[in-house]
Length: 396
Image (cartoon, rainbow, N blue to C red; front, side):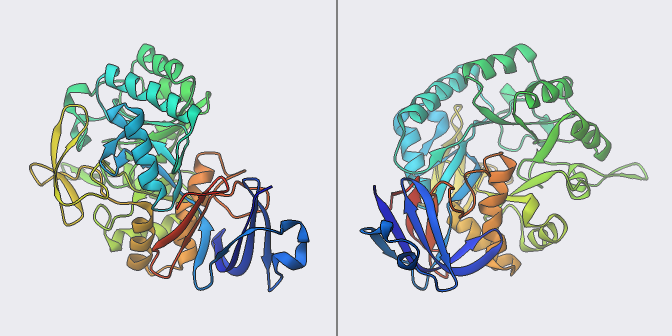
């Protein structure tokens, strides 16, 4: 039985850090030796083993990205097995061990093609990050907050359509992001939440009160907090609170932050961590195919929407609208850590344990605990990844 010993590293898990050896066996975490207790003192059954020297490095659960469209020159919307494998390998090399493939607003034919490919690749497996359930981003969005979503395909929730998508995915939709103020959104939330789907506020112009009604219907998470989202506005002499304020107000609503340092500046990162805490924040990339590629022009979505990438920023041609990010999860952790000044263990929690809990997989992923899946990332003091382990297999 294959055994791997990760020796001498500083473990980051559960918002804490400590020195320990980590033993991996049969794809699971078999043992964590703390306080100077070594794997050899525990049980000689772990010999012989592959040894990874982690001295001077951090050992953390693999990063979990709840929101990504692509990277490394490929997009899940391409709908090919080659594109899927390229994205999984790319993000896996940057420390992501589990990701949730995310669609964009587009045609049903394109979506169906991507879903069929998703099921195929997931059943056969691929090198790199593992895939969780499918994340539907759209097409039920407010036009006023559409951002880079294709306006041609925006619509109100259609029960025949969304139940057809659920059937086509064999129930593997894990999350659906939509604007809760649209007609039919509450019925959709009640129906899909009963089937285990995480219902998320996204690209919404909802008021605080509309968000409260949506929460009561089943919405519990906020997609790329701040981005494509209503905030305080004025109607004549009166002020109206929006979705952002509701996200701060409701302790039972979780939020995700695109942690590239562009979508959310340091001041807002600090404020959100102070109010919501690492337990209620999931860090994500919202990455597109241009992640990992040089500056230049690229396509977004099936319509060939042109975007321009310069100095780490992806924008539509008008240079006024952000169009996803070119980030990876290691960059996200590094950036948010530096901008907030918070302990690294707390930032790592937002990239591992918290997203696992949000998606209901925290019984096996997101933490370094005995019996959990051996999804592990090892990195240095600047969050430069050196080794990544997925299901007990060293992938880089």
